[in-house]
Image (cartoon, rainbow, N blue to C red; front, side):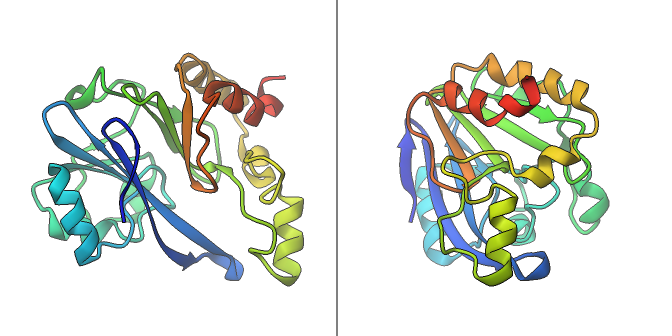
Length: 230
């Protein structure tokens, strides 16, 4: 079920999926409605009949946005359901999903179709994945995928719980897991991306794996990335 998160932005939680080594992750999708009523689908989750009905009541699905090279499990279903939608790829994904026709790839230039409504910043310099962070101006919401996470205590069991604790995945506040911190081998490039993100007047933050931040979003982002800026 879609939940309104702010003016012209909604979120919904999808199924839990299995990742490497038996780790299970919840999924979350966001829908942004542009001023012309076109819809941007961020990190598409499982496309059920009920979700499709809810989405189409909001407007026309015009853009599909997988935010990094790890979040594409359900993308093909959405491409099949909405063949006229434009698909924008994060760096690295076209090489993985050769079965999908991408209409463009995120770089440092704005996307003309939603310039002034949605901003983005490519987080360069990470060896695990190159994530694209977004900012919806009307709702003052920043949107992150895997770079910021928080799982509740008890989500993982046994040795996986120990690994998650060491990785900061179950920290008291959502933060950047240690594996992603280590993977930022080009920190100069990452800090340049962060300067762009820190200029956003973010009040709220949506993350794919963890509770949304509903106030003081910019302060939260600066705490999450303090290890990189110090």
